[in-house]
Length: 116
Length: 114
Image (tube, rainbow over the protein chains, first blue to last red):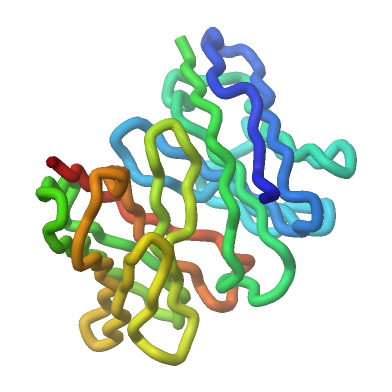
């Protein structure tokens, strides 16, 4: 069964460093998402991406964040200058086209980011 | 804007007992409703979803949920749980007019004891 994959599974970085989190969505999916979950808190929407551009983003997704689909398979989240509060589990998700908000999103296993 | 409340952060139950995990939502627009499950060290997996039609929705692993519009609730139930149901369960909503961005509750950790 097709699945969303994410690398790395864990990342430790120093405050101020840039990190790139990678995701490989399901191959025929067209909509891509990033979410994050700070330890002990709820899963929060960051950004959605369709047709090579951001379609929606949350207040969390400020200028320090960017997303890219550099080729036909990868979908990346870059944090330019990490802060302590960026420590969280980051989930990538994808869905096929269709019933917009009702279409099932498939989630990857997450990348746990720790900023020291 | 939408919000989701899961009142119970932890629910311990014994094996073969019934369980209900509560979810209430708030929204000024029509929404779709979802339950996701997260097993240890895994991603989120869809259990079931309500789009329209019958308010009782059946999902995987014997779970079901009932949409109650007047009470803005979407509680998850299972008549008899197994040890393997131990996981964290997330309720989520999506604005029908959006790109599908999910708004999640804080999650409920279900712990099934033998």
